Length: 320
Image 1 (cartoon, helix red, strand yellow):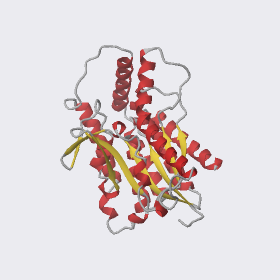
Image 2: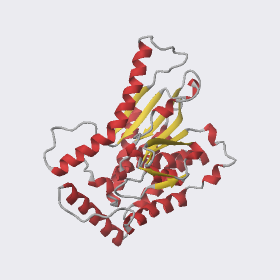
Image 3: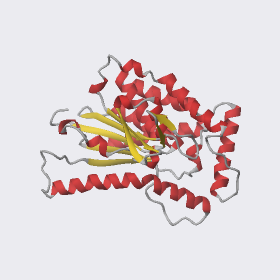
Image 4: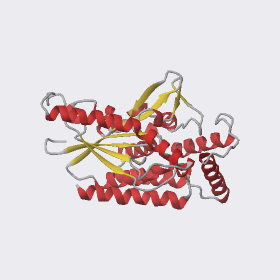
């Protein structure tokens, strides 16, 4: 991008089914990116990683239209459309809501739960049906946006950021392996859990690289509410808010670090030849949704979130 243009990176927070909103937002961003803006990076954790991965692949192998088609296809396939699947989805939602209310329910490790294995395999099969990473060979994907996907190494206790061609389907599944729902996913001999436990989503890695190729603006698609009116009192409301706060911990820390560098640059403490002022702009899912709804695959609910993401992203671009 030339000196008059703007480099943009988009970071996608994780949040289960709520990231259907992210799919709609990424579709609108890719199709309507201002001509003087260039998308230089995508990152994500958990469901946000899936959306970022599919958008990145679509852009690398075709164009914005293809990226949007892949996102739509994934969420259409994952939604509970058949009567048996709808029944299972309803039972899962009910169980999660009862558990949050303090009810004593039998629990099973995801390693011994056929339902957990089937759900994880379903996501794998869906991604494999949409993405052929070998198709990137011979393409000029390196000139497109970077891709970062976050996960956490279970045994070593360290954050891992998979980058570009390191991002395999296993790496994406690892980023979405919520410990109580899915088994850990092995990548290169290491077991990984959900990116929600590490960087949600990866931000600082997007700022690494030559100054001319790093973002001038960082757009964050945030699906965990930052604020709530009043302190929760019921057990379900307490669990919802606890989950929201924990999902935002790493995000707020990293945004704070970026804003601190911006302040030091403005004060003249850092050389502008080495550091860049990065404007952070956030698109938030402004809906009052429960933690249990992060597991909801009802087709109407998914479609509503995708449409909301498209609409809100379009308004975000209009405001610019």
